[in-house]
Length: 127
Image 1 (cartoon, rainbow, N blue to C red):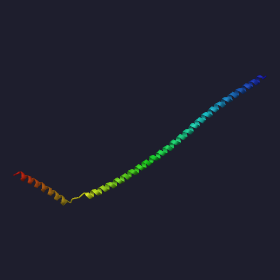
Image 2: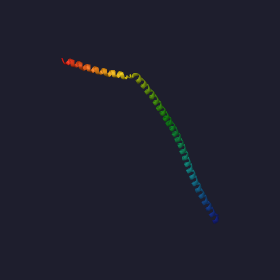
Image 3: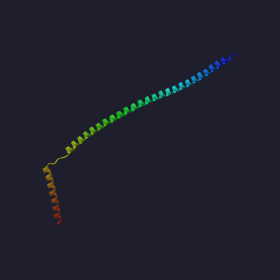
């Protein structure tokens, strides 16, 4: 049979084994937890990288659109200025500028026309 000291030693060894098993089990739980954390960090890093690339693409597209709009605005302004200039040339070609003596002649002629019309009515209605 076993002596009481042997039994105590066996019980102590058994308890140490139990404690070691519990510690091992707790360490395995912590390892699994850390793997999950690392996995979620890796997935977050990938998602952040994808979002960063998408943001860069959107910024590049926005920048290209702004540049295109600026170019279009300056091109429209240049075309509008050219058309205004062309319209001014056509207007100046169509517009006839009268000299001072031509204006006086036209005014005197209009006065004479109105007076003759008035005299003609007076003579026609006075009979």
